[in-house]
Length: 136
Image (cartoon, rainbow, N blue to C red):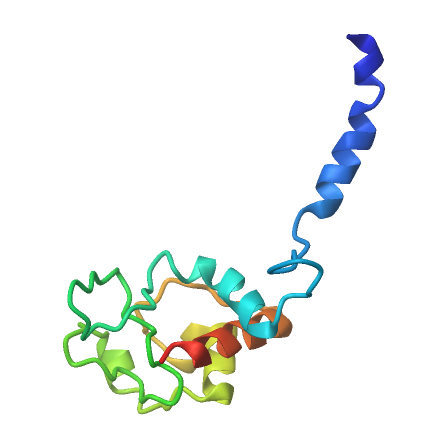
């Protein structure tokens, strides 16, 4: 048993070095920016669906669906109870607006109900935006 313990530190280093690395989506192909965005979107998926709210059987979450959000005006779903701040924001969710909002939601829309503090990594934000563009 002690013979195996001497390899434990090496195994831990190997396992920890793989943490946070992006694995190819298939084979040896590196992930596309959209695939990286979909993986990063996992943090958003806790509150935001990517399903079409007009589709039969749509089940909403705490936040509004982000289906079709790219290019849409803020508070664009009539059936969602947006905060007064978001309803009055008068934004269009384009690349620049999404990037700024994802970085610091409360600076872009003060008094938003969104509890997300923001994403500081610009590459991660760009990947999330690339994924959001695919949701049509």
